Image (cartoon, rainbow, N blue to C red; front, top):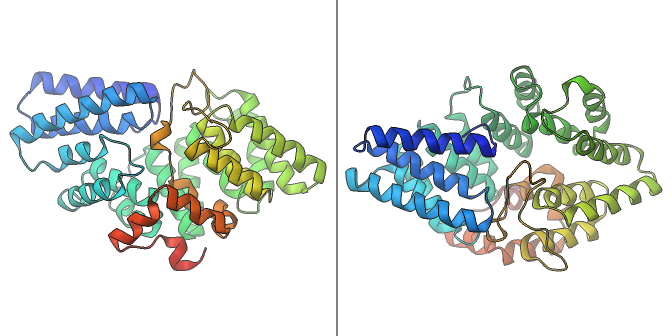
Amino acid sequence: MAQDTREGQNQAIALFRQIVTEDAGDADAWGFLALTYASTSHYRQSSEAEVLQGRAVSAAKRALSIDRDNPIARSGLALARPIVGNWSRVGSALEQSAQQKPHTYEVTFSFGRFLAAVGRNREALHYETLLSPSQPIPSNYYNRAQLLWSVGQEEDLDNLLSEAARVFPTHYAIWFTRFYVPMLSGRPEEALALAADTTQRPTNIDPAEVEAVVRVARAIQSQGVNEVESVAREWMSKAHAGAGYAENAVQFLVALNRIDDAFAVLRAYFFSDGFDCGEIRFSASQGTYTPHNDRLTAWLFNPAMARARADRRFAAIVDRLRLARYWSDARVRPDYLSSGT
């Protein structure tokens, strides 16, 4: 599951199905099957997501018929729906499960991901630290890196990325994190140096995709009017082709100080205003999606988006996403409203 690929998700589902076939009385196994179905649903197109969520509910109910308070199954039930707009319902259930099973990787990981999605990165990092640091899992490295970046723990971030690079030098999520963090933190020369080593570029990623982000780094570095304009046009176009491209485009446009363009893509991504980014993330061959009703939000709260968060239009975005209502109802504040960044 933690490979963060379609094939890895399918393997995880198949393995848990095999376990419950061999031992139908194992409540935890049914719970893990439910949680795996539910987690996978957030990365599939809407029609498939609904099927997976239905299977998650069925598996969770089977677990709860054996152990009526099984926290793994309750995490699966919580995630068997879109997270956007269901913030309080999902968050409350995941928090309760994480408190019951704080050292169960999948449960704690799921709650940490939720906290990041609602802009509570400092709290998310607390739950992330409960996970064993020795687990060489790509998604663990990726999420911890995003959290450390977001809370400004730069020394810890550097050490983590160095370790991740030794273990997973060409894993796509690790490589792009190592590229984007310095590029979007005012150090594009570091990103360009990483990309210059063509023997260590990410596995199974079209070289043209890497060259497209290299052009962004060069534009950030040069700030040349023509270069910035060319890259902005390129990524505005890419934003029409996929949800993952749109997420990247917003952050790149902010870095290039094209704030109006960034908000145009934001409105399209979340609300299909102006144009529709679609559900596919990047390419059909990768096979991962972000459903229209279940867009990702954690990236809104990373340092690359600071200038966008300072714009009055950002408040309108989080209001339409019902995040502002969630923060009020839950009596919590996202980090950026507490720290002003």
